[in-house]
Length: 278
Length: 289
Image: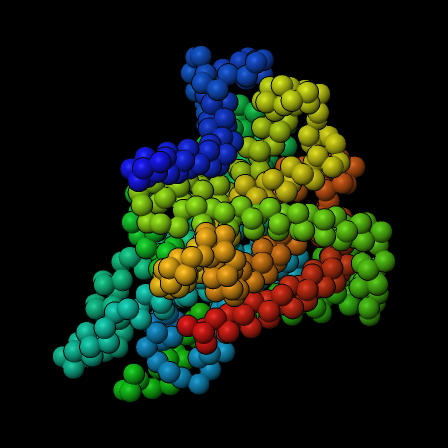
């Protein structure tokens, strides 16, 4: 086999394997999308049809009629405030860890690694009673505070790694020109850190938008319930009506994937720049 | 930075540390306190000492879930690690195709766990007809997946692999990229084949990333709640009620919070042991770098 044929073969195998992997990863999602667009009486048809013959939005209409908007708004608000809190508090701590050598610094770094590894489900039981005591059960504020506490270690980690890549001279110059340290952070460091902030924000968004177990335990009425809880309750309520269920799944997936596509450059920089936890 | 004082640094990290103290450390402290009491529907009543701990470790349901967790974690670990390592090797070059491949693999990991498990439940359910169509040519047309104990466990393991192979891939890929390419070139010149290069260079150089990936996956799988809660509901007949789900039921369906706190703290202690291992490995990696 000559050299060129070997390269062509290798490329073909490469593409075929990638296609196979993509098929396994995406099949459940595409099948869900297909189901969500089928009229109710065609969902169970046999043999199953991957591409719907007729497209219907009736299941999305059902969700709308059931008041899904309330839960979507809760998810949006909780995610937005969690991101703001994480990036605000996280930039300060990340800056300190990136720029100062102070006693206790390595203890903080190891605390970060430890908290990043704590599985949240093992915290649920003790946290539940505490949230009751603080009157934070069934509040969006409660969810924001918990989510921020759980995602801050990751945020601080990403941001301190990013801040280290910004030359110290820039803020020294700004401080010689009369900026205070806080002004230097706000006007010099943060504007140069969009990539790091977006990468950290995407991690926080993914957690807050997707979280199911924390919201499941910390909300006992409809007030603060988020989209995943609504979907879970549909699972109990509709049982095996897969039309509305898969439609709900798509409502959860599509906005998130869209945001990732929009910010893909930042995300890939964050995911490959050594900033991934572990 | 010389002109920065320690005090400034501590001011900057205080809000962060306060958040972790209030919402992670204090709940754990309260949980530890409550684990020594009998708690009925949020009312703390009698001091029972280690009674709750005894109740947990002698409960047949807990012991069964412990065994099921061991089974689940072992299989999920093997398959997820193998898939993640294969994917990391497969997509390690920064070509367009490989970057696309990585992005697609990350999708199941990025979407909500709840939604992922629900979509798999729909695929595996007999009503969808999808698995029946796929399996019928293999003579397995009548096999039910979620209604059979062993198959349900296998489905749970598949769920873990489908979602978390990407997590293993990311952790391992960072390690792969840090292996100096000259080593491979030198080995090639010395006549080492691809398998020899993998065994003699890649594996030894990747020792720490591999161990970190292992421990992190074990922590993740031993505590997992969403997969069994959604995909199998712990069934059929509790065959997939692993620890995370057992704990959730004790706390939030039976509302036996004293017992649940004792249970959660024992699980947490187990996690701490693994987390200390992660930190040690992490420290070793930092020193190596």
